[in-house]
Length: 412
Image (cartoon, rainbow, N blue to C red):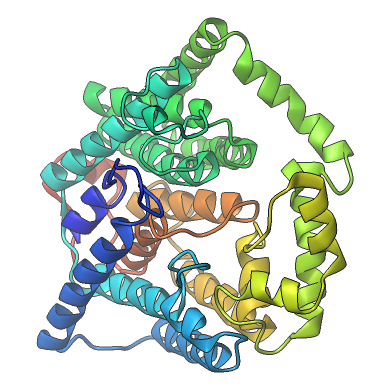
């Protein structure tokens, strides 16, 4: 599990001629590690108990049926073909469920592993900051469009990745108060600024405001103020040295909200065409990775208009829940929401005092918030499912206990 989480974001093949230097190696890596984890779960006779597990299995079942009814069933099951797919078919979803079960029942998190993992991911975030200043010896030489996407391959996808790790590292800093953790927080925040993804900026702003409630209640405000000061300094520095790009991007949020179809970089137009697709197949959807195929087969007016306006096609809804409803049906989306709700309901008595479960809840929430404007990809989604698995455990560590414990989280 640690190997998968650590290597997956940084694994790329920077050679010309590949379908994608970013994804080509990630899909096999996810498959190999997930199969190895599945073998371990079978060998350990991992028990499938709890309402959340039943909901997850039900969700998998509904998605599988949607695959069989899809326009292209093989594409829906495998998640990819020579001309379509982002490797997020039923098989990949099954791997996510395997990762969730392993994290829930067997994953041990200690300080050494956690900080090694965050340090490696800090290097990935640092790379995006170098790209922000035009330094990119690994990707730009291949004539890729310039951007701050590190080894993830897309600014929006990198944003979902870095905002989740930023929230995690901030929670850890409030717990342990160590300067090396603070440095990681600043690096991840710099990566978040560099990615220029407004949805992720807004998601983190919501978490920053919401966390004040928990910290004021517990009387833990000093580390929050230190984080706020460091983030403000980092933002001013990057904006000043980056020709006011960050401020300009932030000011464009209000302009984007006031637009109609082009709002959110065209997301409103994508959401409208997706709602039409949901209306066409409300029960089973078009099938995983078949949304673009459905748009083409039904001559979706919004799809055609978007293609004429931007010169691009659409294969994802750019809103995770909306996408699930479009490709797997409204029942699947409802079951997935119930699955997440059940996890939080089981923690309802301990979430409102600052502890390890609160940090995990914040990480899951920030990922979910940005996913309302983004899509799921195999580089970032495994981290989300691991967080869900660890969050679903019963054991919780309070801030006062954290510094004295080497093992942060282990199966109860």
